[in-house]
Amino acid sequence: MLLLDGGRACPPEDAGGCDGFMELLEFFDPEATCDRCEQEQEEGGEDQCTECRETRQWLGNYDPDDVPLAKFAAELAKARL
Ligand SMILES: [Zn+2]
Image 1: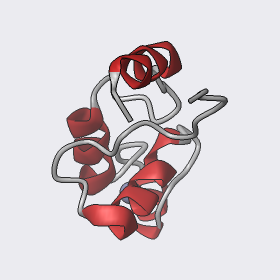
Image 2: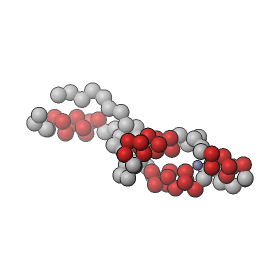
Image 3: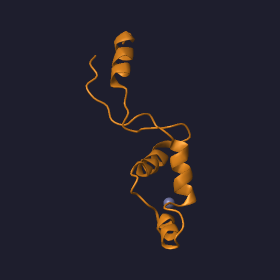
Image 4: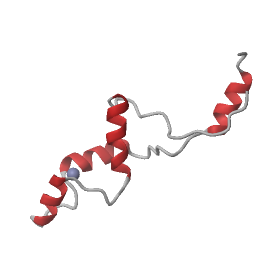
């Protein structure tokens, strides 16, 4: 068996399933803002709302594009299929 390619890392723990993960992906665009972020900015407050800031903090260094293909390929090679 040959592993050719992969897309997206495994969702982080507690991502809320596929739908939750799809919503989380929007937080990886640093320019992305929600309505509440824009309201905060208009009022001269923070550049992002509390929910967006906390979500980005929770995500930390998680990178949805970091797919360890070499590791998966090595595990597949070891597996007896
Ligand atoms: Zn926001």
